[in-house]
Length: 208
Image (cartoon, rainbow, N blue to C red; front, side, top):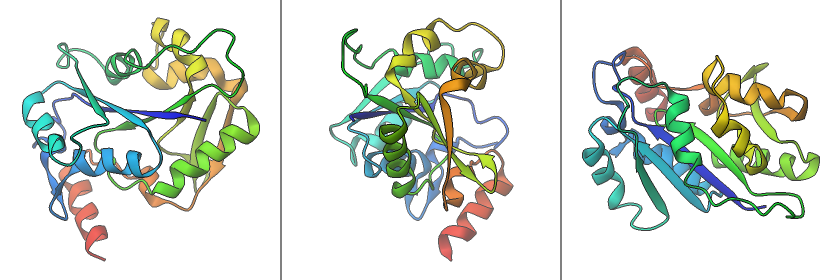
């Protein structure tokens, strides 16, 4: 099963007080680590959605990923939610053939501030999607859903048309009866960097 990836990194980082994608962990930008984790997890093509300080964000990715990473701009990053960026990223993926034999390609989604997801988590989700033919697969840590969800590309037309409440969670709720959860041993699937306290804790974890 072919897998793609979408990373949303268009926001203002207003809660952090600094621009999260360019903050560094272990000498690498947070956004670089996030994209790298997805590629190491098996995504053959990654679309990064940029907005605020887009050229600076693109610059930190250009050297480590000279190929295999695509960029799309969310020009309304200041007034739209994450689902708008997700839709822009998903719209860049090739459509699947109507008569394609299952399983269809799938796509991982990560916010740009989740740099610690382990490669094995991506692989486990893909294996379970292939085994169960679920349309959406979530990692589960201590009974709570984490990132990245793995979404069948069969879902994309309905997600792109979704205009209801709840953002991406609301959109994925349309496939609740075809969704499974898989327990993983990966704290990284629950670590996002919303605040400076989150970032400082992430630095401590990296140094251990």
